[in-house]
Image (tube, rainbow, N blue to C red):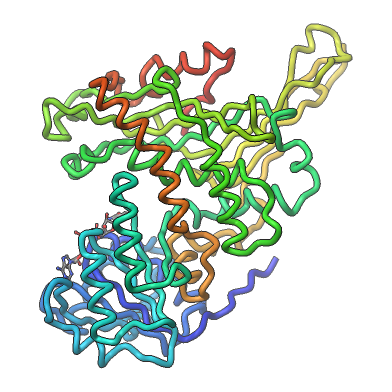
Length: 484
Ligand code: NAD
């Protein structure tokens, strides 16, 4: 199979916060990979704009070091790195003052695609948007990319949307949720809407329940004070898990067009039931040997913030009434694993003997590790004897199925940045979607605050608090094991 890389149009990409952690770890290594694949035109330019008195050469050196650190060694090619770095420029700028803006105005071309990546804290979005306009750098042709977190509640998300709307039309705003850039997430749409096999069964009549797990092994060490103001609900559920739920549950859009897809996702969010307190389990990891507990990492002895959450979510519409979605995410868990698992119902009647047991199909969509899908099907156990049944996976690990091409699959950031340049908003959150997600999230968090709910402790390296197992046990179901 030969993959096709279609070069994007000539562009100028300005990265505000171009010296920051995100730019060095994700954005620039990602752009380097697109450069290597031939997708980035040689005339395109990447302009770092941040505090600090660097010149082009110093910036190129900084990013050269970032590539050496964050791009796998076998992908580092000396000549290509050199050529890529030549396309980098730097403008020292103060988002809150006048420094650097006239220089940026001179540098950014009007006859190429213009994208402005706000890789800075949301407190600076307004300053950047206003100055881009005051200095006539941005216009109706520009695109602006903003990072998570997009607000911490409905009110702050509305305020951010308003600040951006003062300077840009919604069609110019690209709100990144990098989960949407993952290959498997898009494959979920391909599998659902490009095959006749699944969609007729994709409803409460045939699906018993859905599990969405995003498990991490890392702690919040080093960013505990920041994380403590957020917690798993704001940091993961309101955005990443919500997006995965939407893509799993949405109706087929009439076409694969940004607004058609986002309209359908929005309808799912609006159909989510409020979640009662006994359908939620929150946890905080404890200490293990020399590794500190969440409380120590957060630097707040009184903290009630959760580093783990499991919840049962119901969707009130014709397709899903009666089929719960169980969501779970946490830090310091047993393994790093993200997956969506669709549990189909058992056959209505078994023609085989009782000891053949009960069997049900299970479709697993793995986001990490080993992006891919498998479908558990029931077959006859080979060999003589009676009709014994066994469940086997029909495995489709992309790396195996697609051969060497799978290695050049762009990672989430690479793909999303190229989508910005192409002007395709399908995989970006729309303002009303983000607000609807907060509208559902806010009362849940307010409930904990009013009642003074405390998260339960859990052992590091476990699957979270025992009570999260009960959330499914009481419904006669079990979580899939969190495993490597
Ligand atoms: P960082 O602190 O490492 O870098 C901040 C950057 O902003 C620096 O380049 C700094 O020079 C620039 N900056 C700060 N104040 C400025 C000002 N007044 N004028 C001009 N430039 C200024 O931050 P980061 O980790 O790179 O995060 C950037 C944004 O991306 C944040 O909103 C963060 O929440 C979000 N984000 C980061 C990550 C990540 O992995 N680091 C992941 C998701 C989202």
